[in-house]
Image (cartoon, rainbow, N blue to C red; front, side, top):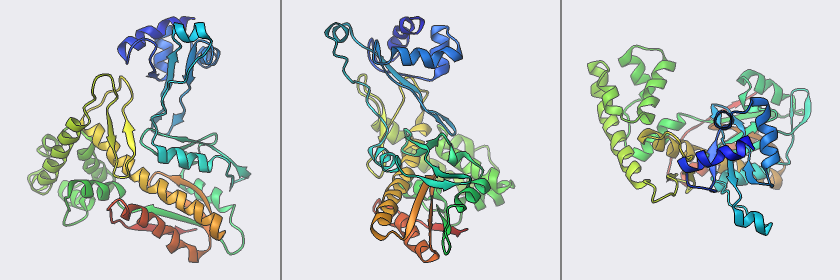
Length: 345
């Protein structure tokens, strides 16, 4: 009851009394003054009795918050608790997660690995129990290779320069050379650091002030790009302005809607980030579904799982171009031309 009576405080800061709220376990614990050990059993006791609860799932790089809504007095008196928590994950990601639900694959010593697949808010599919996508690449590859039969290999198809490609497409802006290599030469930093600096321009609130702190030559090369970024960020920020108590959302090139979490800290770069990451997820999710469908028709390969802007499958070397072209085709349908790096292990 500590947690139940604490919920109105969070509701007033969100959409209103007896309306859904998003909150990580930490916030719920701190608001209700209960322990880490008690939070999960408490939510389970409330679920279906006094509240509608959708417990969040740990995700690489962050967490999917728990969604909770108190039943109204009318619902409780009538004994008819309705479902009002909306699943704000993109439909395409839910379709892929459903298609992967009952699939198994060999992963190291586990001959029937079957993770829980959870759609994230931007559309990516995240694995838990076990979190196979979070394993180091070398371990992941060696574990998947255990499922290869004679004459088969592990196939890895990865979108080259996924984020810059999508960003340049959205902006209608093209660098004369690789922006990461350009940043390496003009900023005098290692490629990993240069990549981080270039990507930060897309996802920070304002790119122009950042570039103005760079050396003169770097400013000359990146200021036009930064101005184009800031113009599009401002446009998206205005277009996605929520009306009334609705959530802010942005629509990806694939038509998926990426919704904000209630009470979240968002700025112009955040919205642009959702659009880019959501569009990449659209491409990989559609390609993954096509590979699964092809497996059922041709039975010449076996889809494993997607991982960020890539996917894994097991098949013969002759299958590599077909699987890679599936990703290119999914991108082409969104008007994007991209390259796919393939590796066979």
